[in-house]
Image (cartoon, rainbow, N blue to C red; front, side, top):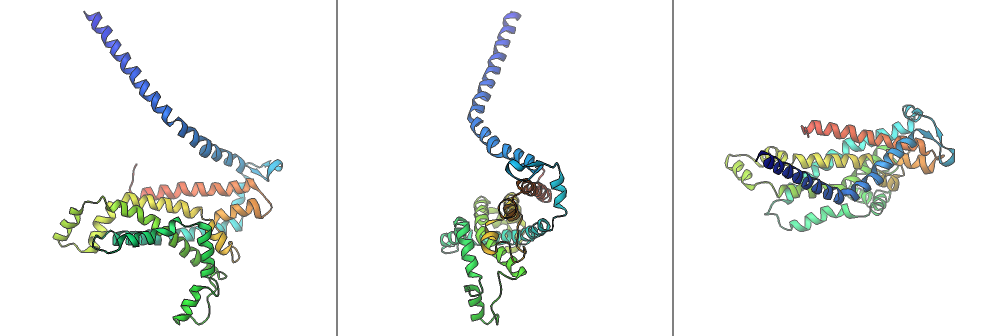
Length: 306
């Protein structure tokens, strides 16, 4: 009797094992294509880029130099300038954009507001415009005889046209305004979607307890949107570190490299200066390192242990 029972248990365990194996096998078949695609188009290029960063030159003239390219970064004034400019964009533009996106999302989530759909669409539309097209438009808007100077002169706020594109400080401001205009609506959509899932009874209870609108925003809205704010902050940080189109088409990195970004410097190293693909790959890996470090800091500051 015990032998029959033991045999039945063994058969049951084997059946369970094969069932699990079959489920896992089928699951792997479904994700195999995605895994291969990610490995082929993401991880393989990353490894090749790192190997390329250990060389200097281009094509058949590539020469192995080890980590000399990484040491070269610290003595490269143009790289330091591009890194500084990129951090200025990051530290100024990202917080401004996040705050504006939060403000618009809360405002446009009010069911009493008329024409909400129109305003949502109007603020989001810049996110779907062509990068090159809108950058060229901003270049003309902020030109010496552009619409911005005309408006400021018409309102008697300035006496002479401002050199938006030829003054180092104003050129940075122009880039920041352009990026903020394009991406604020993109982040706003995430916050609006999250606000739809916030229990309205929480706000009603807060109002009954005498909480003002500002208190409700800081003690209910912000905590409930914390995961989305973290997500948009990281995505915006990555996007700003890879900033290229606006700088290329509005100021071309000028005047005097005052608006040069890291991505544009990589482009110049590859196609504008004497081509050095190895050193360009080294600079590109700086972006990878910065993304990892800044994302880790943001997770820690947000208190996300996962």
